[in-house]
Length: 432
Image (cartoon, rainbow, N blue to C red; front, side, top):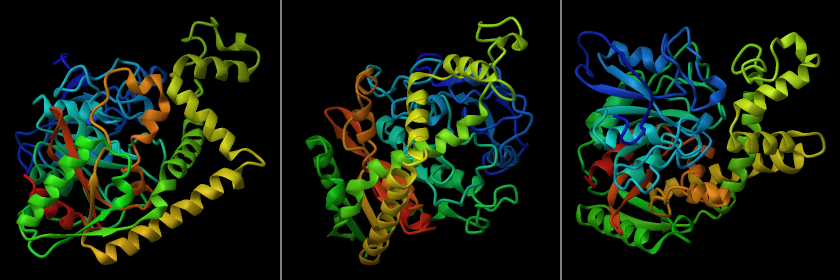
């Protein structure tokens, strides 16, 4: 099981005796709380932390008869596109162990791709379910914001993230979404749209008469092999009765910049709680003091805990987010990023009036070689160009295998209107 380092903690959590997921194993990303089982978020800061409660999605998995077989590896606190920032070591891509599996839910995708779990849960803040699904050659769904409860998900960027399913097939991913979707009184952002869902039934492959919009901006700069594979998939859909139209979404060129300002700002606020007093590594555990009273200055104790507990990428994002929210810079950066977010939502609304779904390569490049993204963080950030606009617009999207480029998996992303999960599931199933 350690071949791909897909898990941080191996544990067996049994569900009900029967249900739609009876007999299925599910890997749960390690930022989703599991009662009595360590939940680290891939960070030294939370190593040894054992939640006293289950996340809502975990309760629903157990009620559906699933067996949780471990906590999946991830980029530290969800910050990364490669699952290399984990304190517990990088996860390897089962398709090519010299390559990354994508992130931040790389452990979840790798576990499914390697057959170590039937299904998995990840979280998607800017593509963190879809990116690893594409890189590992499996299916990943980012639900509409509010469709799935975030209660028990350790927060990175509250206004962007959603828990989503990963599976070998579209129908299985949609079936897992049926289990976890629906309103939750413990999460005020949830809606009733998924309460009586049957997304799995939509995986019928019927795209006759469906109009697929292709935003030209989401193809610009993509790897040549990825683009060729994408167009081959579109031709396949046309042969099944769909038609495609080109649409223009100029706002998405600002999406990466807007996303990282918003996400890092929210991360700066959310991760402030990890100071070694209530949560996480403290200054004594970090080795600087025999007793916290010796610190004298609490700021020094907090700084010691955060210096030792957080990795380089998390520190980078906290610093940038704190700067963006600081006095004199809030309107210059965070305010403008929110304006760009509104523009992106408007572009999606207009494009989805001309098409039933939108399509693009999930990732503009094949899987990175190990170490490539860490050497140049900008490369890692820009790889999110096709996925982050969806989170900014609060829309659903699915990544489905579309073929290969140079022997490596390529994913195709379908984006739907708000609560349009059935439509994207139907489109994706036509490619299987």
